Image (cartoon, rainbow, N blue to C red; front, side, top):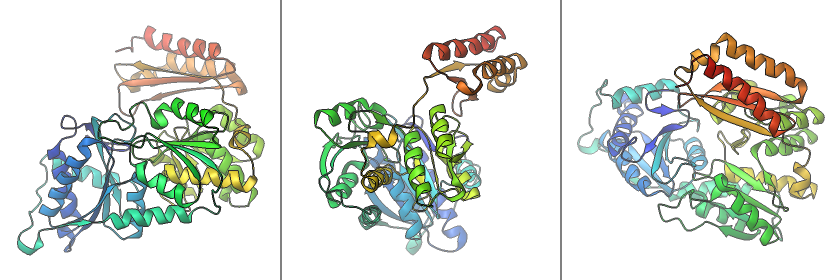
Length: 448
């Protein structure tokens, strides 16, 4: 990670941590780097979510791009995966998504996407940061070389067509609930499910610039749970602000997480001989119950660091076709290069219709283990993590748990925090084991 960009873009409170000037400079650099530096005119596609400041950042990025001689193609309000898809299939030099995902409306972010529809490489990110800090000079375009903006709502429509084409079945007579989080999925998800014939019930579909993710969407799944039960729906899907993640609710009102999706679709692929390497890709935060269910189904798994970026890197390197996070980022590598919440919901529908089973039955084999996760603020993450006494305390817990649970101690990627997580048969056991490790961290003087 760089000075400004983390694992998922440059994020901060609008006009505090992430400013209009930052956006102009990012546009200035990218317009030159992919254009004049290579003796051509760059083509860059931009999408945004519904938060108020996204409009400001859109114009700022366009200003910077055009000043460097690039043409900016504007997709308007759309999802992060749509920008990744259109960047790749329509041969753009790069893509930009303006969104802070599941964060509150007053935060925002700038996500950079390369010409292959993937998250931008670290080398280019560091060059962007050097320009922001004034370490590089970028020439300004003049006369006929100045860029322009192009309305590119056609790209969003092409993406919608792509999603519709992903479904093998009609959704006629299926009662589907959608919580679009007053965000980027607002119009797209409804259009897709309507086209496929679902009997649709939609909530949180009136964005006003300040209500994105507010008490709604995948971070407040309890509202969709109630909505599904009260309306007698067959299934419900909740997205986050930029719709790159999806959580589901079964017909009984139970939450179906990204871990459940990996099991459900992984087994479906295996049964059809489509699960290459007989393996799915998880992160270290996947629940122990998922691994137990995969073991029973005879499906292998890889574990990566937390972040769909690392899941994708594993899939590219190994050829694994399915991977994701418990939070709802699921990557179907045959179709897309990033997590896509709407595509995930379509794939869950596919399994339900193909097997003619309710979602509750499909998800039942994944029995989540109780989990306790506590964050500990420390003076030095490496010092606390590598302390021999802390490591011995972790080893002792792991030994006592055996194959009945697990312990995970890891550093936060964005805060001065050590995360201590235990999964075991009971929540009481989880609490006891987590506290035993934290007591050692405290006794050794690592607390901030």
